[in-house]
Amino acid sequence: MKHGRDDGYFELDPGPLIRPFAVTRGRAGRDLHDLDIITLVVAVRPEADVAGLDREYGDILRMCSRQPLSVAEISAKMGLLLAAVKVLVSDLISSGHLIYRSPPPPTSGRPDIKLLQAVLDGVRKL
Image 1 (cartoon, rainbow, N blue to C red):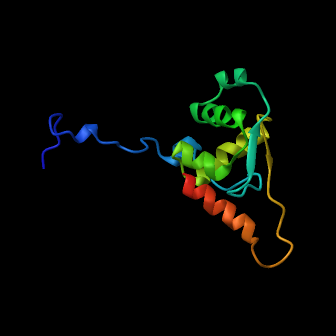
Image 2 (cartoon, rainbow, N blue to C red):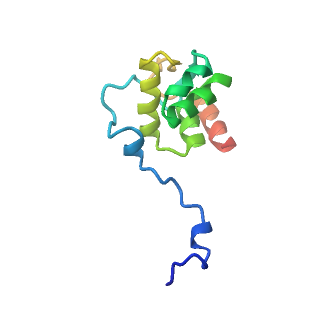
């Protein structure tokens, strides 16, 4: 099969061109805040602070300055793996750009049906 400029090969969406480990500089799962997929994060610094940050950090701050978002929503909107987003969000929390609120731990051994329904509804909206 010929892959020249005339066959439309380059017009297809190539997907993410940067590997997740490059975005996180090879870090994964170490020295991170305790973030769950439904942990909500919100920006607490003005968008003027975005100028000195990498593109992915700036994207997260812009998204979270309008409204609190869950880690899963950030991952979906950025098209990055959840593990990579957790590293980026954790960096922004450590630097004071974001604050977060994790859900309270369940009081019983069974999952909360209302919480599961809310997550399912959110996933369907994506």
